[in-house]
Length: 88
Image 1 (spheres, rainbow, N blue to C red):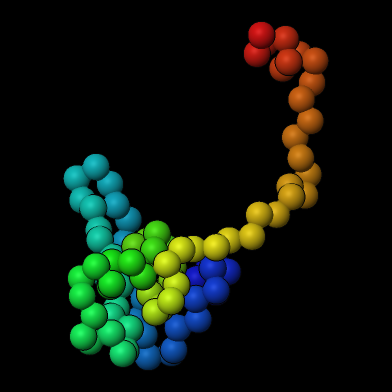
Image 2 (image 1 turned 45 degrees about the vertical axis):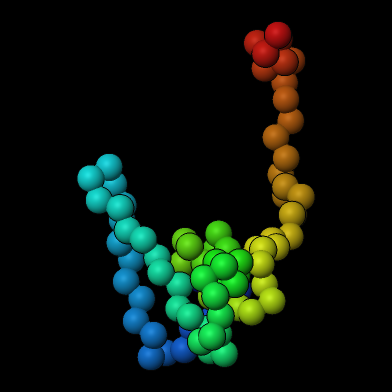
């Protein structure tokens, strides 16, 4: 599934899947990219995107936003007259 997001990890990386619930929440702490040892907290925060925080991307210098292409629906839902009148 991570590959679907474009994240390819080396074989030595261990992946554990945990489920959050109302009593237990997990936080993903992204790895610090090499070459950012002298960066300020603000510089590091700028490259931590939404995808980094949910664990499907790694932070990279120069990348400050997640860009996902928008695809048209393969089978778009067509509204019926019954649904149209219910919305009014």
